[in-house]
Image 1 (cartoon, rainbow, N blue to C red):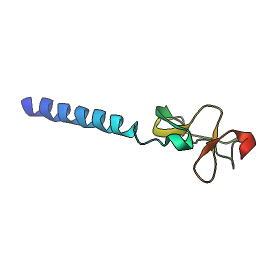
Image 2: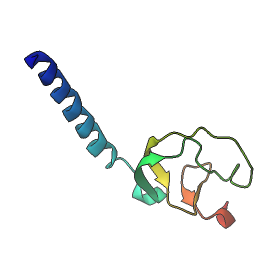
Image 3: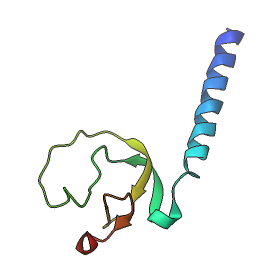
Length: 82
């Protein structure tokens, strides 16, 4: 029983460590923000005007701010700047 509790504690700590590390990898120069529950289908300059199906799941990572889309060079911009 002690082994199970120890393994569980290690898994939780590793998960917390990876989450905190991920928050620091977003590139401010690209206008990215870290989100723990973002979309699996982020808007880009190529697709922001399209109606498309997307899975309903949380994706952790760096995303463009609300109202911005990702340009082909990876930077987040207003749609008018695509």
